[in-house]
Image: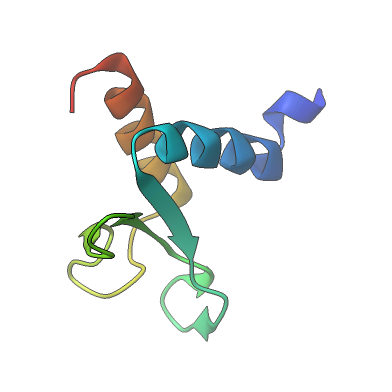
Length: 78
């Protein structure tokens, strides 16, 4: 398995892409009964408003959902 395939490497890449679009990926550090450690959310840098991952609960987006959202954004579909 190459380093590119590790989740931490993927998250760094996603954060760089999101940053180019004026977004920040946030990760919850607290343990939750439903999701385990760390759900995710995306915040708009200009307004500090959470635009993805806050429904139905704060930090409710999975890593895969964040990855899909950012890849669509990069592809120009969002």
